[in-house]
Amino acid sequence: MLPSEVADQIAAGEVVERPASVVKELLENALDAGATTVDIDLEEGGRRLVRVSDDGSGMDRDDAQLAIERHATSKIRTAADLVGVRSFGFRGEALSAICSVSRFSVTTATADGAGTHVQASGGAVEDITETARRRGTTVSVADLFYNTPARARFLRGNRSEWRATSDVLTSIALARRDVRLRVTSDGKEVMSLAPARSLRDRVAVLWGTDTVRRFLDVDAVTGPIRVSGVAERPSDVGTASRRTALIVNGRAVRDIGLTRAVETAYRTVLASGLRPSFALEILLPGDAVDVNVHPAKAEVRFHDRWGVERAVERAVRRTLGALDSSALVATGARIWHAPSAGDAFPEPLTSVPFAVDEPIFADGRETGIEEIRPPLDDAIAVPPLLQLRRTYLLYEHAEGVVLIDQHSAHERVLYERFMHQMSAGGADSQRLLLPETVHLSPRDAESLESNREAFARLGFELEPFGGYSVIVHSVPAPHRRFDALRCLRESLAALSGDRGATTHAGHELLVATVACKAAVKAGEPLAPDEMQALFRALVSTTLPAHDVHGRSGIIRLTWDELERRFGRR
Ligand SMILES: Nc1ncnc2c1ncn2[C@@H]1O[C@H](COP(=O)(O)OP(=O)(O)OP(=O)(O)O)[C@@H](O)[C@H]1O
Ligand SMILES: [Mg+2]
Image (cartoon, rainbow, N blue to C red; front, side, top):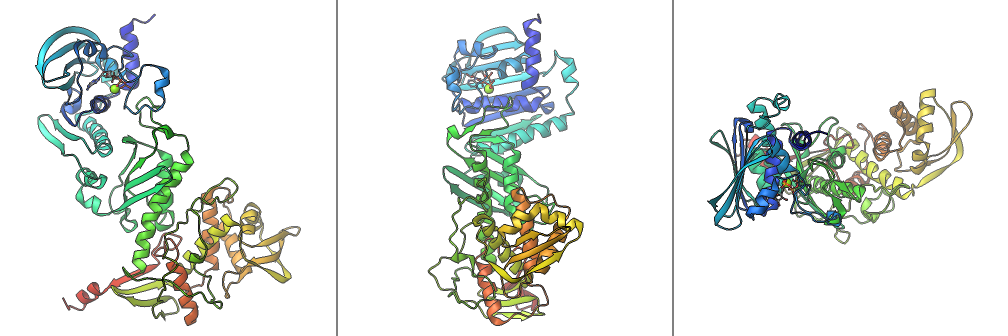
């Protein structure tokens, strides 16, 4: 049998790793006690002292004494209370663990005036006295790990311990922007935060105003889930070091799935390898999430993880889409088209009503294509378009001139259209009068084999014909210049070595490849009606200003800029 103090010290290792974890536990207790102002003082990076004072509920004498015993908590009474716990802690372990490995004291009062002071060392209570204090609680943790030298040896230098603490403080401060926080380190004030009105305001204080200027606002509600906050403008991604914060119901969390959902929203607007900064807050009903599955409470479990991830992706994509549309269309300009039968390019997607929660594929994933498009009942004026170098389309609008890369634009249009067809299954394909036989290389035959189903959804009806040959019965007909067999060959070559489109990301890659091969190329002359149709179709996409590889497909030159260049101002 281990003596109980030793057992406590071992258990403490799960909760208390370094000063940062002490700060986290004490600050969370203060917030649970309803504090609106918390003062934190650190000495020597917290190794010598962590002191947290709050103006919360305080404790009476009996509770103050109990609080440092193992499994003493005021936050739940029965196992049934575990459902929907909203507090930051309920295990009743933190104070006893911290107390068992430090010289510890609590001064607390439930009302201004008479309070209690409890002094303990290594988990043993040494002294309880009465003392005067304002309502609230101060917990002091001195000489962390003084009695467990093996642990003390794992602590790093003051600077590095402070950095860890500062990360903890930053993420809690982002999550609880209603709270006033003051932090000193070795007597110097290092953080002073007034309550902030919005997440953007807190981000500005914590990450810097320069950083926040690079961020776009996100705010969208999907069913019971609200996602709001800020996310980096695509053109700024990669220009400064990356920062991320995720908050779920007022709690800072780390979550790979949600982070990936944000990145997915950016997928076609960023060059590969670039990852965006963001600070996002997710609000959802308390019973849709379990935040108490992790000993340090940094991870969450969702009842419908997939739904939450899609809500996050959708919210961010919406912001990026709105940005793109405004890059294309002068503010206030109404854009819409009169449908005409002879268009060489596909009709704009506006004519296809999208349901966001329309399931794609058998497993019910959505396309991610949003309904951010111009209203149907307004008339668009397509501006006069000029083709330059058989590569770019040029036009003017109220704020300046715009250049569109015809290939990028068409690629984006086809990409969104094909993604929709993948989900709806309704590719309009054309039966060949005389089926064509195509001979493939072994590698291309293999890449066809692993992508057959996806090609079928895009309108390619293909039949294997011994060896490496395939008979083509039907092909998609996205526009009149489309060379289906060439597109098939080029797509297969580009996809070879790919594992096959079994995932959503895999489908996106395949569709992006086919769209790229199917789009008009630079150097092709376009007739006026083709340019107009392309323009209308582009305006109706979700991310018109980016090609599917994340490069810019549109360049704007504002009148302001022109005037500056000409020295007119
Ligand atoms: N700053 C404080 N103000 C008021 N009461 C507090 C404060 N800190 C701790 N307490 C009381 O002491 C109890 C024990 O705190 P402790 O942190 O050990 O456990 P917990 O917060 O209940 O759960 P966890 O171990 O998961 O943090 C709390 O349940 C609370 O009742
Ligand atoms: Mg606690």
